[in-house]
Length: 161
Image 1: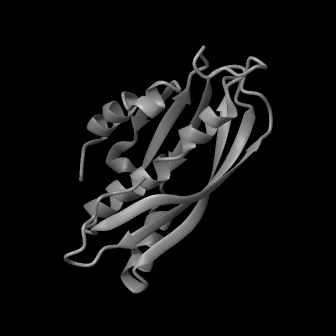
Image 2: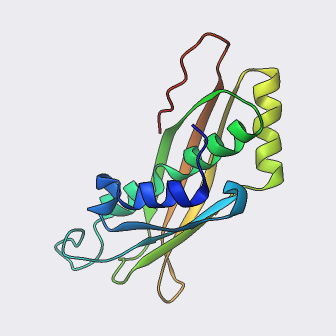
């Protein structure tokens, strides 16, 4: 389903798995070319050491590449199924304050996906993310592998993130 940046932002902000972990979509960039996300530190996501629970950081990174590619490719006329195929995370330092990350989808990334969908019918690629604290220090690095499949006519296309 094609939605506006504003609709998806507010839908995700109140989506319980993100809301209760205090994961907030600050904004989707125009045309779904990126997203800015903030992870607030709170009683709900603080671990024994007083830093943000690693699972919260991991969960925060889960849906965004898939969401962005889904919206971008639908706008290009594709009927796709998109999900996060795999992910890995490296915790580098405790997140003792709010954490932030930005995802950008470049023309090259989108063109790679379009070319793969037009030739093989699927696109699988991993992309890195850096999760930073309020001081700009990298607290975690994440690698998310996105899977996109071009659906054939007659195939149902519920999106799986």
